[in-house]
Every structure is written in structure tokens, then in C-alpha cells.
Length: 176
Image 1: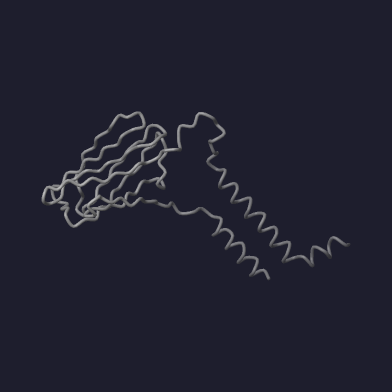
Image 2: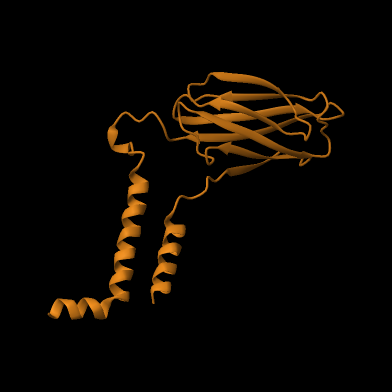
């Protein structure tokens, strides 16, 4: 019985414990179908206003060469202003950058590059930034709130398991 209780405790800790950081992505396609990309935005495809986000375009296409290919990434902010960033493709034909979404709102991302024959390709995506820079404290979470919740649930589960395992002993002691 104690083995079962110990097993249940270990399983509850594993299930309720810290979850690994996940990375989300968006599939983008160029109109001609010759170029596509998986756009990874970290953290979790849900950037936080005022914090640096990692953008990574994993490009797939027959007509692009990573050698000397210049890429232009433009980001149209919610107020209409545009940031233009120049990058080179890496050896695998991908491109990445760090970008800070300063305010909440819709950002239009646009990646432009030329194929081996000079054909221009454009990939577009609208990214919504809904987290960050909250003025009221009701949306802010204490950094240990989630950990405290997991510990509390685990402690309750352990007590419940011990109560079930030692039910007979508890009944005998309470009657005396």
C-alpha cells in the first residue's frame, strides 16, 4: 500500500510540476507557392509588449539561395510607423532577429527577399500583442503564485493518499 501511495505522490509531482517552455509557430506561404516559412515567435507565439521577442523565419523554397541573399523585414506598428530591418540568410537559408513590440496592438510583419533568378518573394503575417504594460495591478501575478498552487495541490493529494492508505489506523485511534 505504501508503494502505491509513493507512486501516486511521484506521479502527481510529475504531472503538476513545472512544464517545459513551449515554442509556437505560424505557417506563412507566398502567393506563388514557391516559398513558405514557419515563423517562430518566442515567448510562445504571444509576445509581451515592452519585452524582447525572438522572431525566427524557417524558410522553405527551391528558388532561394542562402549565399548573399539579403532579407528585408518590415514591422508596421499599431500607430502606423514602420521599422525596417535588414538581415542576411544564415547557412541553412533561415533568418532570425530580436524585436521589441513596444505597445499592445496589431503589428504587420512583412518579409521580403529575392530568389536566385531575382524574383521577389513576400511573406506577411499580422501579429497581435495583447500582454504587457498593464496599468492595473489586478492583471499582474506574483512570480511564485503558480508554484505555491502546485505545492498546495500536491500537499493535499499526499494527505488524501495517506488518509486512504491509513484509514483503518485512523479509525482505530479516533475511537479510543
